[in-house]
Image (cartoon, rainbow, N blue to C red; front, side):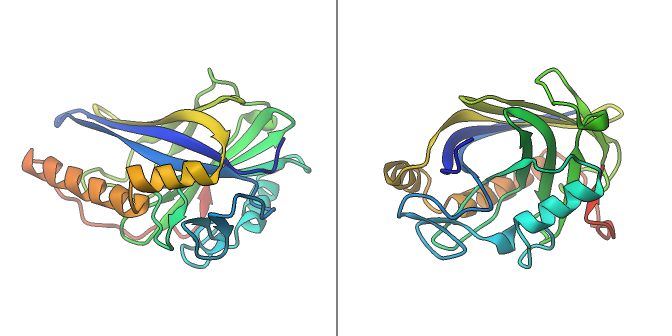
Amino acid sequence: MSAWPEHVAGETTHARRGSIAHAFRYRTDYVLIDPETRQGPWLFSRNAVNLASVDDRCHGGVRGAGEGAAWARRALTEAGAPEGLSLRLLTQPRFLGVWFCPVSFWLAFEGAALRAVIAEVSNTFGERHSYLCAREGFEPIGPADRLAARKVFHVSPFQDVAGGYSFAFDITAARIAIRIALSDGPEGVIATLTGPRAPLTNRAILAAALRRPFGPLRTLALIYLNALRLRAKGAAYRARPLPPAHEVSR
């Protein structure tokens, strides 16, 4: 598995079901990196400001004080994952130092087989919680597998902290497809991230910056815009509860 970072020109969709239906989609740029190396084109940096970059402080533990790959490996070991797994991080990069990513994914492979995923969820209130997704005995995760987790973290102010998630991962050498379905009785949300994989190049970074300037700020703006649309449809605002005391749940 190459350590050279990849570009995922992705599309994200969100569809809310239940008493108030609402759906939207938008294009977004992710990178898939080996978080334990510093390779990449000259417009991409690790732990330094550049046109595009990934900073360990943004990932692996408390937001703004992350430990990067060391945290992810510790979380996998504590969960009983096999040793020697190859680690990749799928996330939106920083653009000119600006960063926000609603969900990043730590992908743990044995060869080409996906063995575990840590879904690192960040809300707009500066908080974070991670869900470790794995089959019994850390058997390979296939596209037909559905990995369940109880919702314990406040994300949307229009959804209760209740119900559960179903995660699905279809990761191939050519493409990434991730589906997260939240179910809480008749209420719920389905979110997806799909896109082709390609080597990260200076040209790809420049094209992404021109098409979607300040990508993280654009993501935040779209979140707030759709929150206003939901409020206009009559969605009730929920007070924000305290985040869970533990960083990772399964």
